[in-house]
Image (tube, rainbow, N blue to C red; front, side):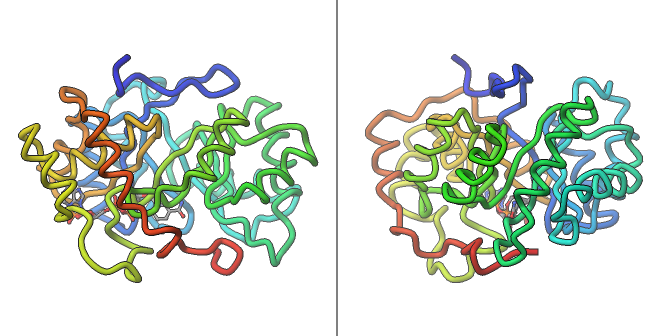
Length: 283
Ligand SMILES: NC(=O)c1ccc[n+]([C@@H]2O[C@H](COP(=O)([O-])OP(=O)(O)OC[C@H]3O[C@@H](n4cnc5c(N)ncnc54)[C@H](OP(=O)(O)O)[C@@H]3O)[C@@H](O)[C@H]2O)c1
């Protein structure tokens, strides 16, 4: 099976596995990067209310001329909307900023357990799904305990949980919980760079295990790490503002890491260090 084959969500909807991340780009930089990404072939675009770039991302999507049905647009909402009626209001605001008439996947961006509103928000999202206003519903940065509360309250697990995941933060326990409940794992910070990784020293992309595989396959370290995610069955949202890297990060379907290479890269896990704790942080 091609690793670029889309993921099938539990409601039968398909979602591209290689997404384009847009934070922290805003304004013209975001529009230019999304334009390049769409030209390169990305069909999943990941944005959020919190990124302040839905307007710029929407501009690129609308100008691309790509039929809307061929695209999969994800956005996420902030803590202000953690109540039953919140997701409908959040979705309305996102659609207006994006200039689109629908998003495909809406995510609760962070659980914010201190607010204790994520179950109510989840019920609001299920109502939107039921009404046909969303194709899929999900969460981001939810732990198995948070997810279990949603399942217990509504009988329905998210289609997708987007969480910080890369060879330093392998997330065995979370991925096992997702697999057991039909939840697609989508990695943010898939390259171990960018926001949230300041605490971790070093550079994942210069680690000998990654570099050796890159040399063996005549690919870049970034491509090797993204390929690692795909071979683990994950979806990714890599971000780049650099046209060459944008194209490179999607060109990961023409080589296969050996089991040994996957194992060596997986062994880079730092045992939970560097995880942004969703019981503490959230917006
Ligand atoms: N749900 C959440 O809470 C959450 C949190 C954080 C992020 N996200 C989403 O996930 C996306 C990705 O996460 P992220 O941006 O934090 O991290 P990332 O995609 O792992 O890393 C992005 C960084 O890596 C560099 N880069 C990209 N491709 C590269 C390559 N092939 N070789 C070397 N360096 C490369 C980029 O530089 P250049 O841009 O300079 O090329 C940028 O500095 C975000 O854009 C956002 O959409 C979600």
